[in-house]
Figure (cartoon, rainbow, N blue to C red):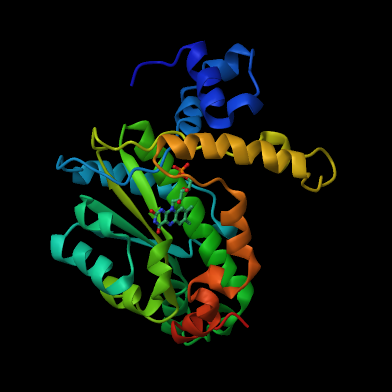
Length: 278
Ligand SMILES: Cc1cc2nc3c(=O)[nH]c(=O)nc-3n(C[C@H](O)[C@H](O)[C@H](O)COP(=O)(O)O)c2cc1C
């Protein structure tokens, strides 16, 4: 990848925020290739047939393992799925989005207390603390931090990625397909491959920075902020052939349990996986 110019970071900010974009002047910020890579993130759902080599995955796993992990507990794992039939089963049986069948690699990120439990069990010790909500949260947080490091590393190499929360539509099926033991659950997947030239998804605008960022104390959202974002996102969505903005989507997500698409049973499902989260 060529070194970014000053224009790259500020242009990327404009793409990310539209009219609300901050503009930077500090050369250290403008010269950061890492920052430019992160600002240019977009989810990719169409891939070429070009393979992703095993050494690349080695590097991505090392990047994932280099993320911070709560108390160095390392309560996450990743299962690499390459086999065509296995990826098709993720779609047909575990609720993964259809494009997963065409992705060269899918990484399944696992919130994993099975390893700690096995180590304790091997020493004749119990693993009761794995059953508490705090432990479930730590497993999911660890898995997410690891995955995001892998995603940023992948994008820095020109690869495209897309998270797959859809695998939580049926955690039992995802666990069976990944061969997980008790006390482990697929948190989400990440589809990975070389972006297809026909992939049209661009940099999706986000809420203006000061909607999510406040100084010292929390600032509640204002209607003006949200209306501004509604127009910015609607304009982007129109370029993607989608007429909608954001307000309808976020209201539908929060209004009632229909927004959870069946995942309101998550505690029950986690209990079945040996993570009752009490
Ligand atoms: C935890 C998580 C789960 C996601 N699950 C899916 C999914 O199942 N299918 C999908 O197409 N995109 C999925 N996405 C991608 C989001 O839809 C996407 O990140 C969001 O719309 C913002 O777009 P961008 O990533 O292109 O900026 C997921 C993202 C995250 C962080």
